Length: 58
Image 1 (spheres, rainbow, N blue to C red):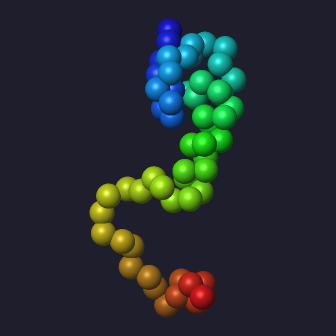
Image 2 (tube, helix red, strand yellow):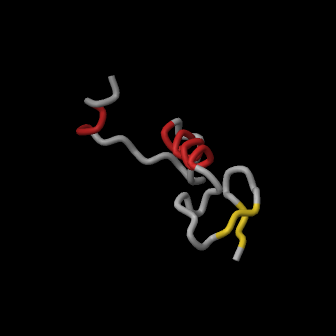
């Protein structure tokens, strides 16, 4: 079964794919970088900052 890579949309086999669901290690790392850079976000109101958390936002 072939599935589209979530990053580049290239069709890639699902079985025996070490980078599943991505087509390559490069696409896997690009996706990880997007998470690290906070490019992916869930829609909604921002979470309130508590007094304990405000000490970390220097």
